[in-house]
Image 1 (cartoon, rainbow, N blue to C red):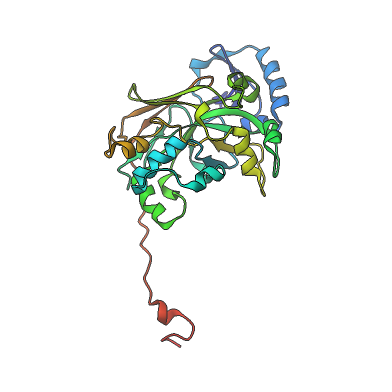
Image 2 (spheres, rainbow, N blue to C red; image 1 turned 90 degrees about the vertical axis):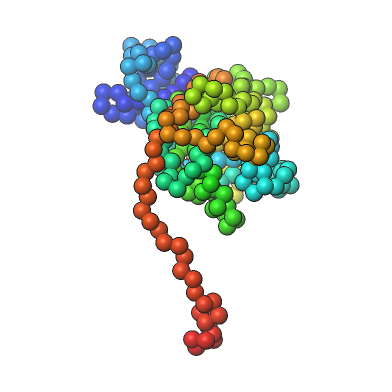
Length: 324
């Protein structure tokens, strides 16, 4: 089934999408996910027995307000290209192969289909990132890969918008990208339940689905989820190690290779070709078995000034120093 979120009769509701129509629930997507996949499928079947409304008559919101968002880097080709773009180094660091690495991104800046994305005022190198995200539907801690299978509710498309120039400066401090990433991400257009998406799974456990990205109608990149370094079950298991995953958590696959973002292409070509995104550009991500997710780039918004760090005399500041 495909579960989406829209404003219906003046309030936000979860809906089932089928054959160009929506069939609403009287609950939100978080409530639907919290009840688990089995219960959601029962509710969906009941909703489909009721009259529907044309999908074109409503505007879809982000399908889910995540509890947390972890974003992985599960595509080797992406890591190689972006590393060259960010710090000029070739190859992939050995630590990448050891385990599926991730960072926590911002659940408070989630956008939906059709939303206008406003980059930071200091950004001059705006980029998209084509990803697929798993939505957790069941709590668990230190799960095995096999156990993690039953904890995935479904899958959606994720665009992890990136301010590459800000990110490049921030990551010199050897922490995460922070303000290079947390200004916006997009989820949608809906969540395809795990049982339905499993039809695309190959014998090795990976999904053989085509992922493409277009800017203003021109294809920029394409790849298959079959090229991930780890399965989604492995991502869930690793996220839960010595910790927890809970319903409503979102886990991004990381950006696909072969042009899944501009920075990868910049790193391989040694120049910003294609150029950074500009106001008015329309970015469309399409994933076989899920659908398409489009957003328009808007103008930057002004940001309040934050002063740089004050510099102190470290010797005199220590106990027993010059001020003692």
